[in-house]
Image (cartoon, rainbow, N blue to C red):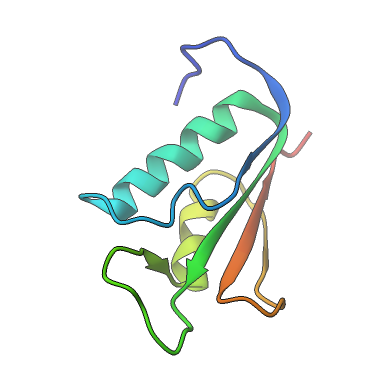
Length: 98
């Protein structure tokens, strides 16, 4: 995806912005990841509500870390996921190779 805005940043961060369900949510997440990577020069960090939970609210979107990893690998081979902190969420980091 191209960066039509012309905005550039070393890192692009997203915290909680992808937690509410929208139509075709997984497609939306993939497009957002592409947009964030097109703006960043070094990398992206984005957190999601995990699918590994005791309950889910209908309005929330819970993504599996495995699915997120697959989505990230479509954009870069430099992907890391932190699912080891005491909230029902995880953070994925995508890096450019340079």
